[in-house]
Image (cartoon, rainbow, N blue to C red):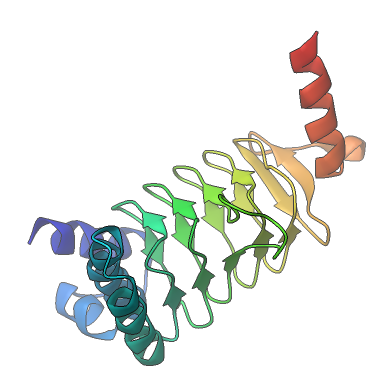
Length: 194
């Protein structure tokens, strides 16, 4: 009962439209998808791969949210609306993450092994954002609606656009020095080698 209560409470804190626990339990597809994923993921980890995939596809039909049973999703994740949301097999979603409808945590089709994103604690991923490849969305980062993110996003920044660019750092506008994420990643790489 603890998981249900915590998950319902998270919805009520983050969604002003949520009035009662019963309403959240009965009408929020994100709650159902996350609960179903817990069983699918259990089956996946215990090598019932086909059964896990069948179970996840059944719930995809009912919730319009597709979560691969191999994805690792922490407690305390909030999926708002959720329709059209896709989370790939090797994705990792940490506690306190908020995901909106139409979000894709997908792969490029070229990578092997870890090929889906990692979304760190407290990050917010807005509607129809596409986060592609084995990249990391940093702690408390925000991804704007319909952004296409192909590179790591540092913690505590806001990114928007196609391709995604940093527009805020620690909540402050970056002014005229908005940088492409590739430039940030290159700078971080080279500074770490000094």
